[in-house]
Image 1 (cartoon, one colour):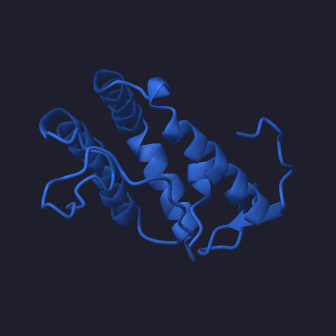
Image 2 (image 1 turned 30 degrees about the vertical axis):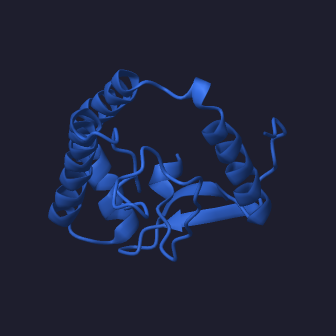
Length: 149
């Protein structure tokens, strides 16, 4: 794990596609940031003694869902501003995100493999794995700066 803070790779102005106004400026990352994040995630993944228990993970997801529900209108307005889409569409997206958190909670509570993303890969013997195989990284061609604020 690295405790060293890597300076931002640059800055990105986030503008509204609707009227071009500046919404915010965010830091950007690069390959060094991805490598550091993966290295940290892998070290934490390998140290199972530091993993949160299922009840602790459920509590975090419940608090997150409650916070998002309380800020639903603001989140939808922000997403509509960034994405240039109708507010109603953004409200649907935020509602689905909150529903997704509730689905994660139910998965954690109800599945024998104690549900974590990617845990339902069938093993060679047709059984399910208890945990993911390891850390993963994904890049998106579409930015979502509001997630990083």
